[in-house]
Length: 43
Image (cartoon, rainbow, N blue to C red; front, side, top):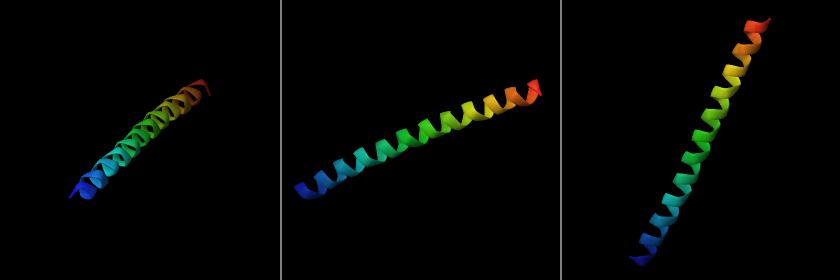
């Protein structure tokens, strides 16, 4: 039973990291879209 709890904790850590990476990528893409939009307006 202890092993299951340990695995569950480790899985939660991994899922949190992937969630954080996903949020970071989403923000980066939004910034890139805004930057491209700004360039488009300048042209």
